[in-house]
Image 1: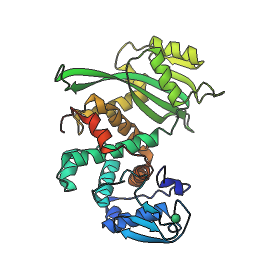
Image 2 (image 1 turned 180 degrees about the vertical axis):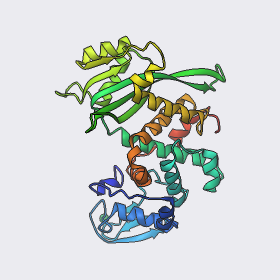
Image 3 (image 1 turned 120 degrees about the vertical axis):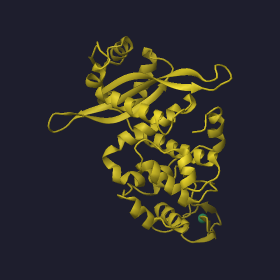
Image 4 (image 1 turned 60 degrees about the vertical axis):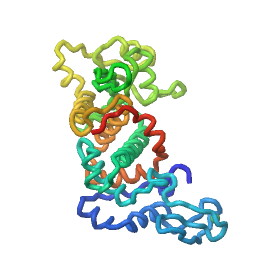
Length: 333
Ligand SMILES: [Zn+2]
């Protein structure tokens, strides 16, 4: 059952789904269980241990027992819903809202809409969805000409020292570009990372994660475009990449000369001043991943829910304890 449900299908057939269609397809808990069952076993139940085809339903919550070897299989194993006490219908609704929102959902709003009393429960659910977004995007590499830039994000630190003090986090943003039929440059995939500094070694590590590996004869990234900061120059020389350098004389020029990285930075800043105001630096990375995930799927808005649902059933997932350990100190939103 490792790796989630999606392994059982070659390529999911993503459906376009409005809120109206969603409500028709997922009107009850049983509809959600049926969907998971059909997605995991499109040809009917198959025991992961002995490949037996017969099973008994143990509970209505998606637990099955193989009639050959008696192995118990949970329908939610390998998904972000595993061992949840929250009805799947509420999870699916949250996923729909997170997939179709432009800037992310407010936990308090979802708490009211899903009729869940505990703030932490909704918070953990949303973070598991975000983790699934990040996992999905981590499979994608950058290629061709990659625009790269960094920006500072302010966040309130609420640790023992410097409670409420402004703490700035450095974020490195990298976007693949490609040229369309009309010869116009278009942005491809985007990634954003919280980084400890903007030194050449840090930038090199980021690029290596995104498309250049030492053992690869031909790196996916052919050249970089930057504001000419010396770290980028060092890295381009070290990795043997072409380098388009733009020296910015006026900060406003960055929008024109480095348009794609600045689009991501602007999107992220809008999110952090809106529904996720007061995001602590511990979770900045997850919110950045959410911003990039949305940007990377901007052409499939109508398939957004179905794509995110598949990402959620093929995620490894974080446990509540792992999440809560990192949540300490975060302000309620
Ligand atoms: Zn079996």
